Length: 96
Image (cartoon, rainbow, N blue to C red; front, side, top):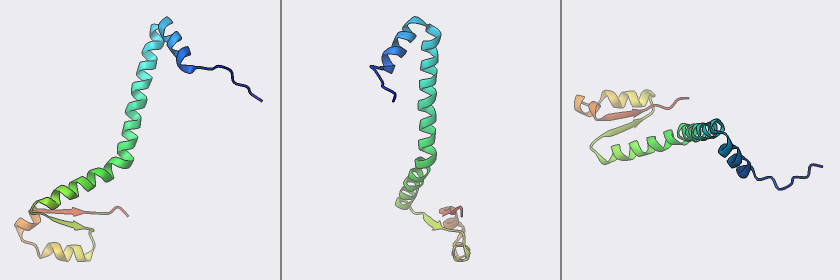
């Protein structure tokens, strides 16, 4: 079996970074890239849903219409609206 000893990664990285400025720059660049990419993944998966919920909530406060879907009933509803009402309408289309 593998027996791990006193293996402190941060002290090893700190020692190498003090000794070599290129290693220090590489650690900083990789850390910034990892944080940035993690942020993009979080926004990609969770942000769209949150942003859409905020938009629907804000639109509902004003004199606007929200139409969810693009089926036949939604098209009939949109045909019955006036030009001003159509300008104030937000249509949410699902991607099935």
